[in-house]
Structures are given as C-alpha cells and as structure tokens.
Length: 272
Image (cartoon, rainbow, N blue to C red; front, top):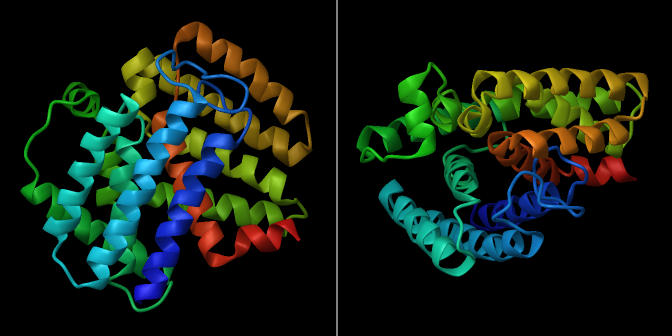
C-alpha cells in the first residue's frame, strides 16, 4: 500500500498539470490565456502545483505511517498557507482538499474498487466536516445564500461527479469508437453539464451556472457528432471572459479524473 499511495500521489499531481495544459477551456487558465482569471497566469499556476506536489507526497507518507486524519488535515492547511505565500493565490485550494481526500480514502480500501472508494471518501469527508471550524469563504457564502453545496456536497456524496459522471463519459466515448482526445472533451462536457460549480455561481449567479451547464451539453453533442468542439470552446472562452465567468469546481474534478485515469492506466491505453 505504501508504494500504491506514492504512485497515486504522483498521478494526482500529473492530473492537475494535465487539466492546466488542456486547451482550450472556457474561462480557465490554459496554454493560450488566463481565461477570466486576471490575477493568474500559467507560470503562477505551475508554481502553485509545485506546492501541491510536495503536499501530496507528504500526505502519502503520513498515510503510510498510519497517522490519523488530523495529521493530513494539518498538512493541507500548511499547503494552503505556503500556496498563498509563494504563489500569492489560493487557486488550488479546492484541489488540495479533494486530492488529499481521495488519497486518504485510497488508504482505507483494499482494492481499486471505485464504489468502495467513493464510500470511503464520503466517510472521511463526514469526519472532516464534523470537526472543521466554520470558515468564511466564497463557497460557504454561496451555500448560505442558495441550495448549492459545491465541493462540500461533492465530498460528502463520495465524489459522484468523478465516479458517476466524468469517468463513465470518458469510457463511453472510447467504447463508442472515440480516441483519447474526444474522450477527454466528452469528460469535460459531462462535468460542465452536471457539476454544481460554486465559482460560476459566485461570479455570475444562477445565470452563470446555467450557461456552463448548457455549454457542457453542447460540447457533449459536438463530441458525439464529431463537430468542431475545439472551435466552440475557443468561442465560448471569449464569451466567458466578457462576463468574468469561470468554473473552478469543474477544473478541480477534471484534474481528479485525469489523475485517476492515469492511475488505472486507461489514459495510456487510450493513447496507444
């Protein structure tokens, strides 16, 4: 299990870099521009991910030593602080939480059974939130002012957007004759269409979230029909920038999906 956790920690970093470099992505930082994030850049995101890499390696070691959840939570808090001090941003705060949670859950299941892993994620998330101190964040304000649960609800439900949406979309596209490229964008489309993205809600309200979801459905259809989905996404990026719309929750879950598919070997098989 020690080597398994170390490998997964590396793949979680790999997944985050793959999400960052996937281009185009409406409203998000990629190889072309910074989307709707005027305070971010590709270089700043890469600096942030170096901190995420160190954090995940430390979490894997902590889990291998059999330490309690509180030890991994402390590492997460330290990583968030380092990220703000070094990169000047909290751009990967959600991913620090979700990736650490998935890694900790993997330490509690004997095999790579995704159903069991989702249940372990939900149990750990419940323990975390039972003891977490209330924090004033954009996500907490969105939860207070609406029925949206965001990353909290996602974690407590066992990552349904990962195991029930992103991964099946990728696998279904490949089974239907697609390739790795189309499968990746089918996965992005499914996440856009289904994730309760509190970043979009914070930036542009319910109308913003509705736009992301509608565009996700259009992307899925374009992939299915082998249409110009790259051109569509480039056009939507300009529209998102004009509205200051983005989708941080989708980005975090896409990174998790990349990471898990790399860990199972499915990304490599899809490329061969």
